Length: 78
Image (cartoon, rainbow, N blue to C red; front, side, top):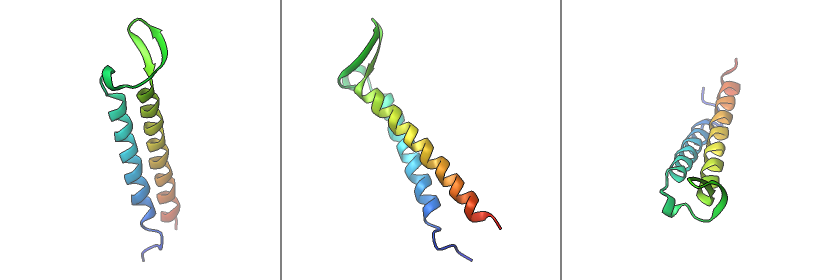
């Protein structure tokens, strides 16, 4: 028997995967496209705006996929 909220698990999982990919793409941008300098660590290392966006988006994606796993586990309990 189908649960009335069967769409929630796939939707959360898909959103989580999309945010993870978006975050990884933001982290992989070349230096010329990383935006405003936030923090310079040394001559060869710095944190730019898109680095923060990438970390936030990846973290949000991980949280969404984790929540979809919890929801799936809750729905499959007998």
